[in-house]
Structure formats: C-alpha cells, structure tokens
Image 1 (cartoon, rainbow, N blue to C red):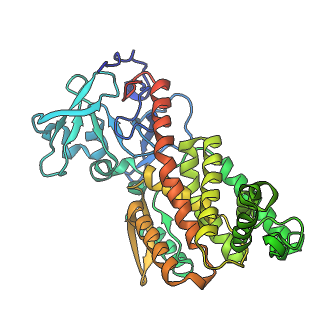
Image 2: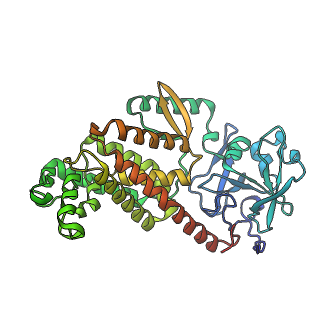
Image 3: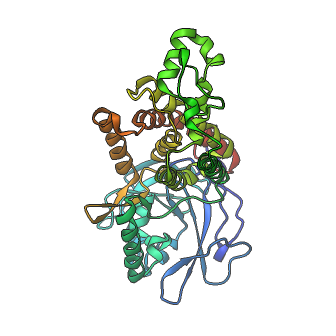
Length: 411
C-alpha cells in the first residue's frame, strides 16, 4: 500500500503546520482547522467563522466535522486537556500497528494505551508524535475542544432545562451538538416548496378531492398531485405498464409537496431540518436532492403497494425524510440527541433513537393500520435511504481522498 509524502510545513497558529488530510477515521471529510482561545472564565472557546491569521493565545487543532475526531500535534493534547494531566507522558508502549495513517503524511500510526484514562487505545505517530482521538475519546480526554464542553456547568444546566421544557410539549428530539457547517440550501428550498404548496392547499387552489378515483381508477378531477393506493392498483390491473404513462403514477413524484394539516407539516419540517442539514453538507446539494426524491418515491411506492387504506390520498414528505434519517444513521451514529421519556431527559446516541424509531414504525404498521399515518412510506423511505447511503459515502470518500495532500485511503 503506497504512502503519501509528508507535507511541506505551512505555519499557522503558534507554529502549527497547516494540514491537508483526509480524516483517518471515517474518511468522509477533510480535516478542518478549529481555533481555540481561553476565555475570561478559564474555559476554552471556539473562534467561530475565524478568517485570517489567528490572534495571539490561540491554539489550533484539526478536526473532522463528521465523526468529531481530532488531530493533536505534540503538546496540544496536554494543553487542552489540562497541563496538570500530562496525558502524553502517560502513553504506554506501542501495542500494535494502527490501521490509520498519520495526517502529517508519515504513514501508518501505532496504537498506544492510556492507562487509567480510557479503555480504547489511541493512535500515535512515532515520527511526529501527534495523537489522533476519535470523537468519543475527544469528548472524554479533551472535552474543552467541543462546544458542549466549553459551557460552564450553570449554562449547561440552563440550556438543558429550556430544551426539557420544550420537549415536554413537543416530544421532539434535539441535537446535543450540530456537526453541520455551511448553509443547507436544498433543505431550505424543500421547506419553502412544502410551505408554499401547503398555502395553496389552505387557499383551496389544490384540492385533494380531485384525486378521488372514478372509473378505471382515474381521478374524478384534474390536477391530481396525490396518489390513491386503490386507484393506482386499479390502473395497473386495467392498463398494465401503460398506466405509468396514462395513469396517475406520476403522483409518486409530487405527493411529498402536500400535507394533511399544521401538525403534519410542522413535524416534517422539523425532522427534515435537524437531520437534513448535516446530510446535505456531507452528500453535496445535487446528490442530496436526488437522494431525497428517490427516498420519497420509494416510500410512496411501498405505501401504495402495501397499505390497506386504499381510498385516502397519500400526502407528506415523511418518506423522503425517513430516507434522510437513514443516511444520518449511517453518517452520524454517535451524534447525541436529547429525548424526553416519562418526564426524564435522556441523552441518546443517534443510532439508539433511530433504531427505536424504525421499530415503532414497523410495530405500528401492524397494529395501527387505520390510524391515518403512512407507516409503510416511512419504512420504505428509510430502506431506500439505508440502501443508497453506502454507495454515496463510497463516492464521497474517494472524492475527499483525491482532494487532499494526505489521503487516508488509496485511490
């Protein structure tokens, strides 16, 4: 396996050599600089949107915004974890070669234990003596480098109290720390589209009654945008594949514009935003838009084929959103979510929350078929998202590897 050449140093904050490297852990993102400065209360603070040369007193680390891992050059871990800890001097002798490459371009790193501090070995470069911490290791050993760890205890309690009160009313999850960066323009565009279409529904311009089936399963009115399962099945029985052209199967592309009420659209908008902004940043705008549409179509098709509620128009973006949630599970499984259960606020990994969510959808599809909720759209949208995401991530990893000086994989 070929190794990249060490980078030519370009000095940044306090002589910190700038890095152009792929994340050695998840491979999904280039490492980005994070600038930290000690505040008046003695806590480290992240300099948001910092540009230009860093001011005095700033420490730079290089972190992955996806898996939250970080690279620490010699001395940085001690400084940010608390110099009294002197963690770097406590590293045990190398146990074995790591499978990860040094972001400085020095080849494969070594695994070294940190007795009494953490159960898993760290990745250490024997050449430059830098240390790589995975996200959960960073949270434990260098919590000051995370936004959650930069708040005082009082501020953390106050923030959680406000979130708890809101969650009691809504029962919606809240991200502990949002790893997204950049503006999610596709997410915003989707929200504008569904809001505008909902406005047309309220105004009576779009009438779901137009989709009610007549002879041969064809709609009674014109301008139908929502599929009716019984109608589409009837069209297929009468026309076969020709129904894809002459029937209303096109509504699988348009039904997600529409919603059944305020609670429906507000809930969908919230889930699309909290999960979609992160996924859009990782996938890219074009891929994310196509991904959402395919998940929505797949979710709608599953509902049409399996639902027993064959006369109600199918509306809502939840099939596409379920696909986005599956992508979030693939990409950010360790990201934490607040969720209130029986008045108790829990901090859950995303994978726990989403596995429970999928399990509930499957259970409710069996026992609450007549509840007026498109359970199969949720399940099929999630399945489409789960199937497509690994392929997109594979493309993403190759793209990142080609864009940096020190790739973590061979391309």
